[in-house]
Length: 514
Image (tube, rainbow, N blue to C red; front, side, top):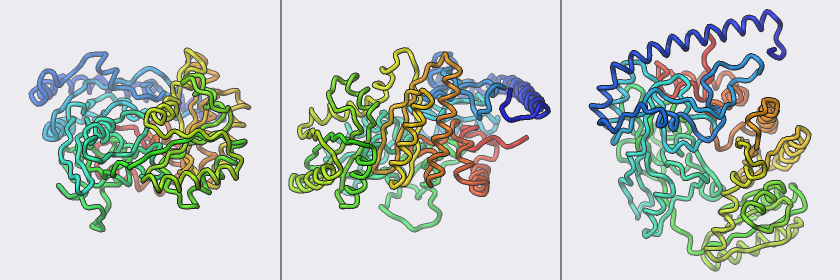
């Protein structure tokens, strides 16, 4: 039964679903015929090895780390906008272009034959952004893996989409420079731009949105645009519309990012990390706010709730107190670090913080932060055999204690396992939901919880996603957050760049009503 619908509305909904399924079947048949006719053209551009129809390769490119992967119609027993399923939604063919010219030529062929295009980096997204919901052609960009232009004196670098953040920092190792945006996963840098990724260092260094200077983008018709002008890399500009930030966070729905020019930073002279325990969530967040108000240039300040700390202790063989905790990191000179550490320690102690464990040498720091970055696997270990789904929201700092307390109460009341970890310096936190995929009732409870969490954040003047993006999972929530006029503006932008709706269709914006 469709909750809250009259019998007549339920019948109409069933009819609509059946018509939708028939339409999909017809589209699939037509698309298959078109694909057969263009495969030879694809091979002439990419070579035999650059075109794959293999089931394993297609499935690999039809999924990310999310649960939003199904190609089925929305089930009639759930009032949800998208199904949850751990099966993949593969493209019809995967292409491996080697340069922007090949990407452009391939896009022109797809545009001419109206074939959907899905860009693919490393598949580490969390909201179903690479699912081929309408089939089509996946552009896997891993072969475009060159660091093209490094300007050490200008603190910037240009990279292709196959370059990951770890690979870039290895390349930069002997230059005294680094790229600090760290979402945890070893994601591709152009993919990070496409999703406006951030992570643990954002409180000091900003998100991808603040660190992208220029983009090269192939549009749906195959034309190539440089969002700040070809080859340009000024630290700031007031010239025209901000096309760069229009494409940052567009999730592949406006074009394929084939180059990105990024800000770099000097590697800090010294680094110190610490862990501190608190009697309550309020005390931990109060310490965070006061550290920021005191002007301490903290590099990372991460919150882990008691459930998450317990999971990390078990998984990483640690012995932290099982209470709300902060993981902190400070960057600077030896002299400035002493001032930062003393100021932070005074503030945390005034809020009941205790059990300070400082990590000054590289090995101890890496072990401390590895525990934080292994939070996903630590959460999974709480329920062996289950799957995990991560969701995130972001609120103003002053509302963080309230939403964290209410969220924990919601988890307990609904008998859900969801350790909490957050980038509290930004008001952003994640619930790592551990769920039995074979239990439909638990899946339903988790989905309802995720929607309640997002709406709780919206009610507190926040956003339904601080980092993960919209993808498939939060399209309806985006409408609630932005309002109808803003969503209409987004749809007009989408129509202007991609009038045939070929670029990663079905993501960010809900389908138009028939």
